Every structure is written in structure tokens, then in C-alpha cells.
Length: 436
Image (tube, rainbow, N blue to C red; front, side, top):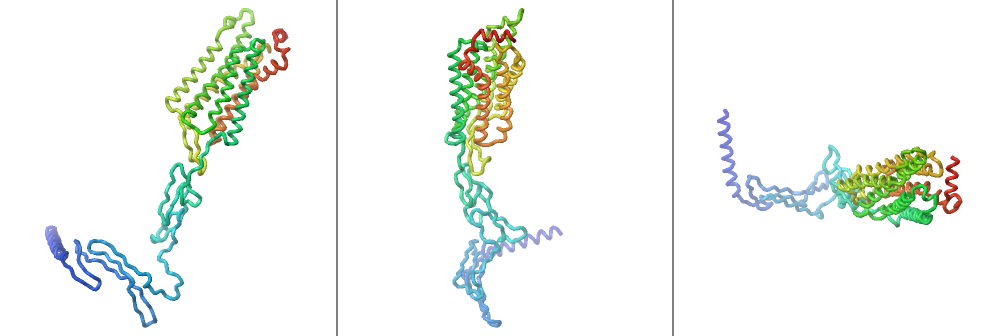
């Protein structure tokens, strides 16, 4: 049976091929025009578009108003004359063959389920996408530096935003930083002028100079965060901030350790006497700074900060900012500074009951408490803000922590030097020490 079916199939195919061979050469004319057959033996397709006219229940006629033709080459041709159509008098306008109105620009077509393809809903394009033609099936996403307008039919440039010197917030932070840097410079001048007085000499004046200079640079380095971010500014922002603050925290730690050594050395038979006059504090400052230099170097080698664009935080805006590159590197720098500040706080707390003539520990304890409080509050505030306000939070933390150190440690001393000079004598300090 299988063999017979195969033979019949082959014979049928051969007959059709032979028939198609002859039909391809057949040409004849009809009232519709020339007729011929294509390679598959199919005749041309010809449809007349007819306008039926009902004049009465018994009288009906029709009028040919166009045609649709597919010729033997597969080409389609559509001919139509809307002027020849006769509409019923009850029609006030031309009927429409679609069940949905056209979607205007700014909207896209959404097909209705289980309904013909001509039935659809018009859905507005989401933010950042547009359609500039009618009846578009998909919205077009705007480039990264552009955003959709209100009608969603055109892309417009995003508003560029960063913490600038023209911004009221930037002006306020710039003014505060400039004021405190100038104030620190004045205090440094006072300490240099009265460098030979007992009060200045009592608590390691070299470390006082270093601390005042580092605090002045801390105030000034905050200005690097204001203005349009660039590759150079992004690199300098975090590295200068980390290194200068490390020098300041290390100076405070060195002053506290110097204070303890000086007091312990006054006791008879103390082993601390051999450390008096040595460069322990300088070596400590150098060691702590080198550790931070190593952290910053690893950070810059692994993933250095770079200028970046934030297009997700605020609608229609393009925020220019510095990307930390490595979050681990950034928090390592901040964490190391926090460790030095915490260590200074602990050591100063231990030394806070030392005699007043030698004692700077009470001032240092309070200043480190302010410093640590600011940076503990900084981390959640920094992580919860975006854009230029994130930069403003970091600047505020730099200014407030630096101002805390300056105000708690040096303002009381400047008060005594300038307004109470009778207390800035060796006899007064030694007499007060004798009472304790």
C-alpha cells in the first residue's frame, strides 16, 4: 500500500508540474484586463470595491468605486475614488471602520485582549520616554542627558544641577568655611606671637602649630566640594580631606600623650622622665599619617573617585557629582579617622584629672566628644541624602567637626593670652599646680 501511494503521489506531482508549465504561458483578456498565471499556477487576484445603492425596497443598484489587484508578479495595487461614493442621507459624517480613536503623540497603542487588532487603548508614555508620531506601538526612551516634556512628545535637555558658588547653600557654606579658616589663621598668629609664654609652651607648642595649620586646611579643603566636579577635584576632595583630618586627629592624640608623659615624669623615680623632651609625639604623628597615606594610595589604585552623573535621584535633573569609586575605600578613610578620634577621646578621658597647670585633657575630651558625635551622625545622614545635598552634608560635617576642635581647644587659651595675661605666667601655673 505504501508503494502504491508513493507512486500515485509522484504521478500527481508530475501532472501538476506539467500543467503549470503550460499555464504559465497562457495569456488572455477579460473585461478586467489582461489575465495570466504565476509560477504556482495561481491567477491574478482582482476585487471590485462596490457601493450598493438602495432606492426603494424593489429597486437596488450598485456603483463600482475602486478595485484591489494582485498581479501575476505578486505586486498589489489599490485604486479608490471617495468622490464617487454615495452616502445614505442619514449619515452626518463618513463612517469609521476602527473601534478606537487614533493615539496622539505622547501615547502608545495597547491592544485590547480578545478583540480585533483595530481595537486598542492609548496609554501615556512613562517619564523619560516619548512618542513623536500618532499610533506608535512603543515609546522611545530619551538619551541620558535628556528628559521627556510634559506632553511626552519630545525630549528636552535635563536641568544640570550641582553645588555651585551661585547656589545659596553653596554661598553659605563658602562663607562659613572662609570665616573659620580666617579665624584659625588669626589664632595661629596669636600662638606664634606669644610662643614663649608659659601657656603656649606648656602643651607642646609645635603640635599646637601643626593642629592649627591642619584645622585651617580642613576648613579650606571643604571648598573643593563646591563647584562643578572635575577629575582633579574629585581626586583631591577625598584624599586631602582624609589626610588633613588624620594629621589633626593625630596631633590631638600626640598632645594628649605628651600631657600624660609630662605629668608622670614629675613623680620621683618615674620611668617616664627619659621620654620627656623626646620626639615621641612627632613620630606618632608621622606613623598615623603614613597609615592613612597607605589607605588612600590603595583606594586610588584600586578604584579612584571620578566625576559622575546621577539621573535617578530627581526627576528631569542631571546631578553632577563625584563618585567615590570604592565605597570600601571611602569608609576606610573615614573609619580610620574615627578610630584615631576615639583613641584620643579615651586617652584624654584618662588624663582629664591631671593638674590644671599641665592639663589640656579636659578640653581635648570635650572636643573629641563633639568630633565623634558629628561623624557618627554623618554616616546615616550621608547615606540617606542624594545629589548636591549629599555633598552639603559632608561639607557640614567637615566644618562642624573642625570648628568643634578649634573652639574647644584653642578659644579658651586665646582668651587667657589676650584678656587674662596675669594667668599666663609660670608662677600662676605652678601655684595652681601646687594647690592641686
